[in-house]
Length: 267
Length: 259
Image: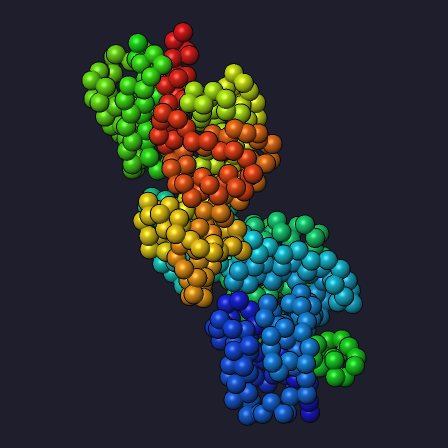
């Protein structure tokens, strides 16, 4: 019985999971603090409590995320790309492409049939195509992020946002609200605009099925639905755990492989 | 002979009346929701100031993003040619124009006779337009007009890592939370905007002297930042408020048509 820990220190949230034999024993998500080391220590405390474990019981910890080099208790730091790829294979055995949409960036990772990374692209320059776009729009529309996600299914004729830029698109949405457009049609249009932007990013690495969608935006059914249509391929949202935990899960899986010295398929 | 130019922009509408080669009057109003109404009102204000009536104008040219909705205009002209012409009129040695408007930015190369050689503009991304400063001023709780003075007090200006307006909005707050002074942050914003616009200008290979037009040109912080970033001599418009450049160019076009 060996416990391993994955800790993902992101710019907005910090996540940790404890795994045992490829299964999640405990997990925690906290808001990131100004100092990455503080975020890491705080999330560790959060995750150890429910697992009723002490740090001494953890055989190996892998850190990831932008603060990965600053995690005091980590044995190793691994890039988010590696971790997301690993987590996607855990959730979807045949995954060849990972689309990870976080709060302020988006990544598309292409893997070979063994799960080795072939290529990846990221967007962290422009808010359009990241979770932030949906946050801004949900606020304008006055709905929660989960309500927004459900709107695509109800939309009869989703609106078209003329602008890509989040700032200009916000003005488009306000205009639609003022003109009395159906809320679901506006929400559906927002999800479509988001999906379109991500599909363009994904197109640049020539994605191969199976496609696994990770990151917080994987909870938005509307984006997943439209993305599937635009890419003409099945897009499977990460469902085995909270998709926001994907980076930390990948880190924990890599921690386990680090101590066993091997890589086992399907865990 | 009087000629009129009317520039209905995204934020403000401007009217300029020229009599032969000098500016007889001008007016600026907030655009509001009806381009037609604001065009009428701003032109009326300029006419009143000049003490003339609409019929006294030999010709009126409209420009700006609302140019198709100016009921009294005899013709329309692109903002590019209007800004180019106005810059050349104010500084005949000008070889380039940089215009930062409320929701776009343009870089224009001029030939010695003031005609447009090449241009490039950005209206796709809000960063690199006047909207960037508006949103940042709001995020910082400052009126837009206070940015220049605030930035002028900077000792050690911040370098922003975000290019996107949305990301910069949170970055400025974290900079303040991390103890950076408001002036240092504002000066950083001026340089961030300048960096975006300079990239546009470099794309068409602008040469000095460069005239800066548009409302943002009144902010000396941005003006200086742009000059420093480009490494080129930037000159302000002489004899006219840079915000009026589009309307002035339209009035000059009206005169050109009439002759």
